[in-house]
Image 1: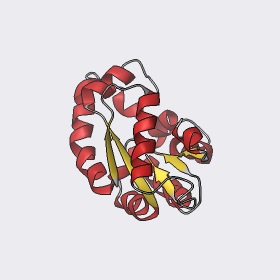
Image 2: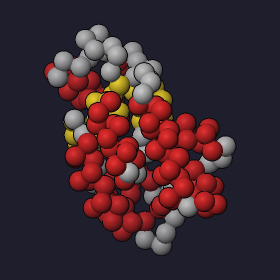
Image 3: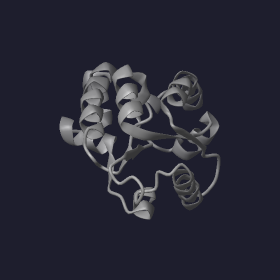
Image 4: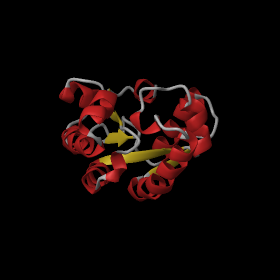
Length: 164
């Protein structure tokens, strides 16, 4: 929705990773483990941040590797869509495609992931948007206004990527 609102193209790094590995991320995790997945993710993020895709959506663990953090911070305007673990759990509690949440206590897993990832995202982010419970349309409006106030609207800066 943000890409449409801003008149930009959009790419999702998880979709690009799945195209690269030829299977779902969940299958890849099961067969090869998280470290192998993160290796592929580094390659895809490097490629995507070197090209002009307008809006780049990333997976939640993208900040775990320093190479990704550097590429995102240096080549994009990173928008951290910050949500509390309880809000994420409410949104994802029925999602069976996320390998890291296929555990006995997914809420506790989300709290553990948040404790590690939140400081990394804050370090990489140029903007932090508290997502809370607004509608997607409201969040898109908030992001568009923030980019406009920062002088980063597409008409002003058509060659920059915005990553979230």
